[in-house]
Length: 236
Image: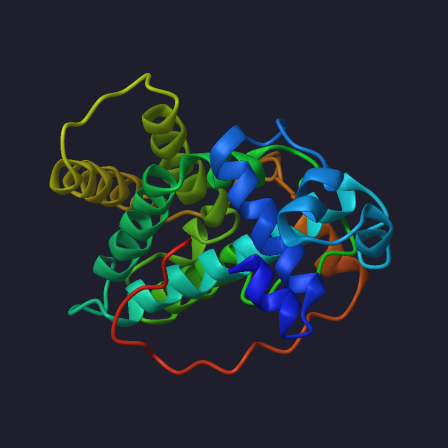
């Protein structure tokens, strides 16, 4: 596919495709910008017109993967039959199964520094999750006192399970079992949050990420147009 994109005049996209293939074959660190260039059939100097370093290519690939994941999470919630916390469970299932299905690429974006303060990702998975938690608060499913920072609580839960699974520290035999365990985890986390009816304690820490810091420093990007799809996006 990479060479096909290059021959159609999309060298930038072809290099991203080649890098993603190399990540799946060798992991996050076992390849170079020169190898990605060779896969496409161009010289390294041609690749440098689009990416001035391997780190720049990794960052761009991470942005593409995160936006793809954001769409996957949003599509999964849109397909949920219920409009309460079941949507959140669908989001969790989509996140964990994405990581299990594509562990090398997941590890690439899980590592710190994969994206930068200048990265523009839409829809960002963090924004998809915060929008859903805002909706759950507005509909009365989540108490207002529990809302501040709830995205980090939910993310820590589902991300933790995803990492435990792809690192082989937890074993679940089949996809149905993974989805069932994820659903249980999400509901347990949500039910815990739903018990927080009082206002947040003043000394509660306020977590941040590269993405949330960027949002406080510049206007938020306009959301990408969205047409619900019949099935969740894949990470391939």
